[in-house]
Amino acid sequence: MKLPGILSKIRPRYLIIVGCLTCFVSGTYLLTRGISEYVRMTREEIIVAGLHALEHNNLHRAVGFFKIADRDDNILATDYLAWIECRRGNFEKALDYARRSILTEDHFGAYEMMGDLALLGYGSATGAGSAIYYFGEAVNAYYGGNAADVKIELRSILERALDLCQTRGDYLRIINEANRLGSPMASLYRGDVEYMGEDKSLSPRSALKSWETARKGNVVAASARQATLSFYGYGIPRDYEKAIALYQEGADNNDRVALYDMGLINLRMDKLKEGKDCLRRAANLGYGPAMSALGILAIYNDPDDDTVIRYAVNMFKNAHRLGDPTGSAFYVLMLFEGIGLMNDESEALSVLYELRGKHIDSITGLFNYLTFKINDSVYDTFDQMVELCYKQLIGEIYFDDGAPEGAIYKKEKSTAVTYFKPPFEDDTISSQVKRSIGRNYVGHLEDPTTIMMQSRPLDFPEMSMILVKYNPTSGADRFVPRLVTSINAAAPPLPKEYAIYNIDMDRINHFADVGAK
Image (tube, rainbow, N blue to C red; front, top):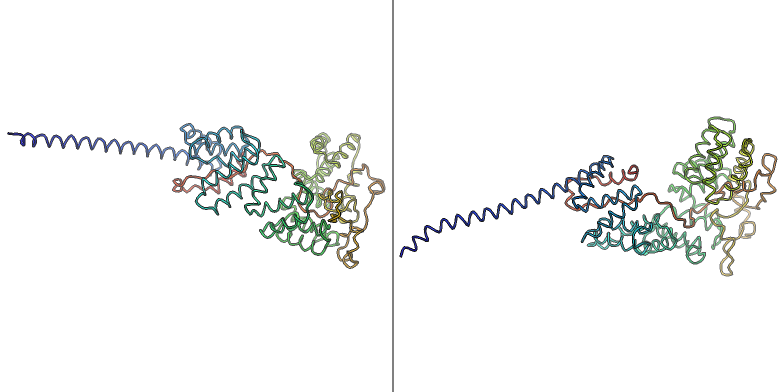
């Protein structure tokens, strides 16, 4: 038998074959893995190139990289394209990208954007209920392991989404959901809803509690709101001293509404320097009514100084851009007459046409007046309007009492709660308090039809309403859907593997805020 000898000859060959096969398999595995790793890194590098382009403010280049990656089914690129289109205001395109993203199994990068678009009415599932679902899916995916992080992040998203609501029902539901999660900002807006009676009925005491929660949560705007209830006695006893202390608290914290309020209060106590300082600070924070007030005060005191007139033009023009009707009215007259700038009657009337659609009585009155004054001078009307508004600012004339947004409190009657009592009917105000607050105490109201300015009656009756923020205000207002031209959500989060690239997400988000369009 020579079998062992034969085996001895076969074994080396077998081993060689096995070795070759092993090498082949290993090589194939390593090659496959290498190719796979190369492909993965290449896919990542395209995304990173797009992110670096965003870091350097090059949106066009970034979009180019993301589109290349998107065609290769890189869903992170799809997320970023959805986000960029949201920033640009191309909501239909954003919806297409976002839908593709969320249809990918276990991928959540576009869920927040789907929630935003749902509030704007885009997609098959719209409204606050759908938005809350999408937001919840997004935060649970990224922070599901930590309940506290989920709560904080969802609360933040809901606060941001309030500006996107297009119906009062959606607005209330988002507020209530954020409030349930402990949002101080939602407490502020919940108080606004109760103060303005937008849910069921007027509820100033409930508003006071909601605002106190917001104030304890360091929402600086809450102080002016609480102050307003005390200043006018809406549902609670009137207390000027407490109100002024709360307004001052808000002003000390740089709340622009409180600064405007303290500006008026000081002017009416003959503290002109303090009053103007407060108005300047409010204007520097971008508050339109404060800009209008500064323009009026300046031009009343120095009507013949060209530098002052140009300053007033800038104040009124900026106030107009910020949506303050008072500034708009003055800017229109200066355009119409050529006061401090080249006259342009066509532009003046164009501005009025645009504003008339907002149904503001004072603007409508001015429009009707100017349409009969084409080719006539309106300089005397401008002077009359300056004097009228100046006297309202310093409290020499009152056509109305109460907060500018609080007219509804005069209409509501209740046997359980005294919603509002004019100060001259309020026998709880002592003579000492009246003296201490100067012209902030309203002794009586004037009839606009009996007022004489520049030695003549008002040129048009609605002039008495030109000064829109004629008294200290809470800063609260009724819900009005905003025209949303872009969505300012944060950029989609990056997966952990992108940490090695040191992408500056703060820079990307800041660029998107100021330059993505």
